[in-house]
Length: 261
Image (tube, rainbow, N blue to C red; front, top):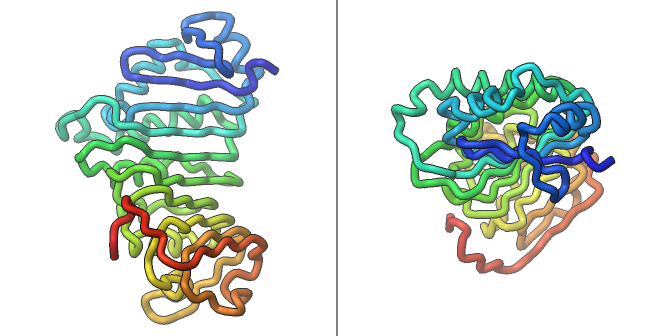
């Protein structure tokens, strides 16, 4: 039971596995032999530059994970953070490096069905398209949960427009309202929960439920919605037929870190 939940912490110079709160270096044979079979959930924290440049895969190989398989892991939580800065030359082949990273993750954890993504502490470099390509590539076929939590001022939501199959979207930090709406609309067919409560914009629900040609967008599986509105329609069943939990705030949020529209 002790090793069912663990962390892969990679900083491009070393890697550690943390079962709960006890830190153990990944070179330990005890961890290598036992975590593989007992692990059920993994929290992986990596610098995005390391993924885009290929350094993360090198670290995994250095720590003898090339042939490892964790057959019991069904939940992967991936946190991307800024780490060290990088030049564009270092990540010029980012698509190939991301493809290799995703293949590696799928081989390590072949039975993952729930993916949780969060992005934090981005630099001024606009890496949003790289993040979007990573999320699109890593979400597997048949996954039951694909959650994206936006908690970084540096990543632009527009870079994620090609990501398909998201089931949960949470906006926690600075973001463009129009981009948030577009990301939600593009995943309408798979979304189960959406939290846009931080977006302090006047009545943007019509944009969520209508496409650019004026046609109604239906969210067939959406069960939970958090939204900021001054006026809520009486009947939402036509566009949200499965809605069970509606959290609606009114008035001005006056949140300093939200981009004005």
